[in-house]
Amino acid sequence: MDKRIFTSLLLVLFLTTTLSAQDGMRRRVMQQPKFVFLFIGDGMGHGQVSMAEAYLSSQKEEISNTPISFTKFPVMGMQTTYSANSYITCSSAAGTALSTGHKTNNGMLGVDPQGNKLESISYKIHRKGIPVGIVSSVTIDHATPAAFYANSNSRNNYYEIATQIPQTGFEFFGGGGFAQPTGPDKDQKNIYQVLEEGGYTVARGIKEYAAARGKGKIAFFQDKGKEADLPYAIDRKENDLCLAQVVAAAVDHLYGTKGFFIMAEGGKIDWAGHSNDGKANILEVLDFATAVQVAYNFYEKYPNETLIVVTADHETGGMTLGDEKNYVLALQQLEPQKISYAVATDQQKEEFSQLNKKAKIGWTTTGHTGVAVPVYAIGPGSRLFSGRIDNTEIPKKILQAMGIEME
Ligand SMILES: [Zn+2]
Image 1 (tube, rainbow, N blue to C red):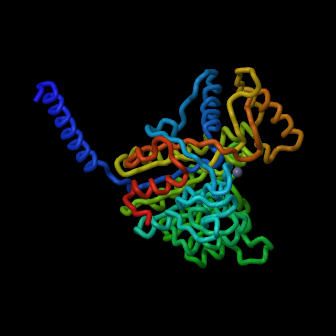
Image 2: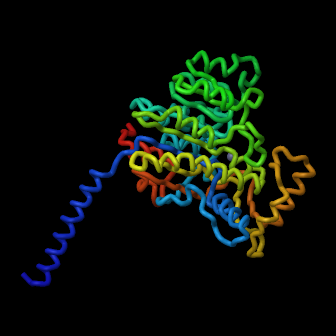
Image 3: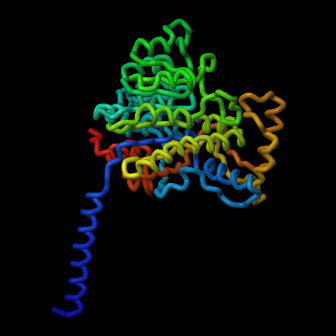
């Protein structure tokens, strides 16, 4: 045999044996996560993330992108978001893909286009004895959180969706309350009573949560009288709950030897996108990043057992840095805006919208767009989330990381 060929053969053999030894070692040390967080920034595309980073830099009078909690994660991917019947998904079709691994038509929730029920991974995880928490800054019967526990031919059946909560047996629900607490015609049993009869301790506000800690199944909402979505970060008043507090409560309540699965949605990034409210949008992304920071602090304690995945369901507003041909972004122009469009008078809204224009925040629509959205991950199994992914693969990869069959 030619000596050169022999040497290269030896080299190949050496490489393959070392690699497979390393591979085996990696397989042995690669742990399955026990504690899994899935964060969904509703309407959070690359534009929204970059804008929030640029805003932080502009506060320091710098031209740069100041990283936020999850943009520092080591693994990054991109996720395609189209639904079964449109390039441009709505939150219920995207939520269904992210929770069940199946695409459906816009408007449908936890069912396929023919109306057959699909199962959320929350149930597959829960059947393994792992506690589950569902958290959102908007109402818990809204499309994204609902996709993780309910099935309905229409995302607008808020009351019917909410009444499915007791049958889930999931240990924690929290955040905003309910869109229709007594049904669409206000003639049904109060949903809070339905939850209590279904075995949930309903805690309203931090004090009640503190008293309810450790009690079986908890549903944790704002104080009485503030029963819908949590306020925008920009409008928050003292004693208002924020997403980070609810995530912290979920961790506190669910932590134990079995691990947990927490899905937490930042729902109002989307709402600020629909109203093309740049400042509210930026502060919602930063608020969402604070909620992810709670999970990251937990990860730092249990790095070999904690997986955090952060992504979006779709982009909203076609938001981008810059408009027209100016090559300028002037986010300091947003300084005078102290409240969201949602609570502003018509006149204030007009003034704020002029500030948005001066800040050179670009918008293409008041609806959703079909661009791919970012995926960030850290912890055991995080490598599964790198590269190009379809939204239907996210739940499959979560189960794969946890060592649970998709069925
Ligand atoms: Zn939306």
